[in-house]
Length: 505
Image (cartoon, rainbow, N blue to C red; front, top):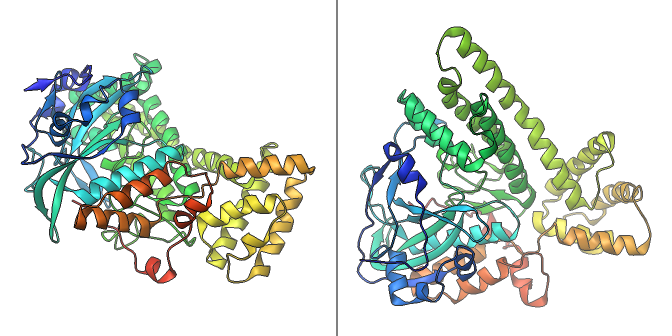
């Protein structure tokens, strides 16, 4: 049984890449109920907002009822997980329903997560629990509000059944919207099988989808690699500048579109320390906060390897060597692209404008000294940046109160004030600068203790009120009011010291 619900599907992936996916149906669940619905996003997609919040809407979001035009498929992909190649992963608990073109003319994937076992499930049940699916809502909407490219949650439906992990938990299905679900691992899947015709089809599809100006260009595969690398350089710099730790940067979790995807064992850092790890499965700290730029480069090298066969089509030694030289140059350029994006971001957070290459280099050193000071003082990353905006207006005491030694901030603040003076020193400029800094440095982030409290209430008691209050706060991250104060304060140190996140699978 199908109903339109306003969906106007044009399913290019299922149509053009039928060899790269398996048609499949979501599992039927006992009692669907709507736990979350993103009405603003639904309207952006041109959907029938009212109809999707009815009982029939809940049945759709749970997978019992498909919208007209949907062609659900499980996508194939591989992935390097913690550095080791898994040649066959794929959508083990997800289904791409299809694509819609939104009100802005942008093609968007609509996909289920937690909708039951597929041919890629590898013995798993393909289901998901309420807590991890609501986590995706909270973190994804927070990232969106922070201006960071991200997949987003459209809906979460309860299924009325239990899923079993470390204990029985209520089940749920997430509906996710993405620019696409193409991953580095998508390319790896066909490269490791030496299915080069399929690899070429997927690469050409990715180019048409995300970089249409490259279609038909003789260097399009090399150019695709460079475009992906540049997008990832900007994305990772944005993660770093808000203290976000993805937690599981496997190649199947790196998109070609440059969006953040899969909010499993992710978290936001509180006390600044580049070695911070929260994920329970990252025992060696591979995906620690400070390692994220290098891991992104490593993942891009795997994409480069996967693309080599379609770049060197005759597969002769001279052709392969030439392609290796070309992709190596891209991979080696990644740190420069990342650093350029990082410096721009840090300058904005520090209230600085670019004054040319020489001053940019000095600003990078100033930023490094600031971060080192945060580490030494064990200061809260988010609040330190926020209180720096107060210091821009001449109110340094709130910042000095954050660290272990109030006087430790003074030398750096003197250096920073001297840098600010290169641009302007009058009172109006100071006020304007502080305001701009407050639009770059959030007050509210998904504090880990608030996230866990909200998910526990939803999971254990069916109480969504803490989740809804937290979500509302996360959607206005730059607003600082007395009502939002509880969401702006870090957790007690004892809580943070033993905090772990879990992948939710």
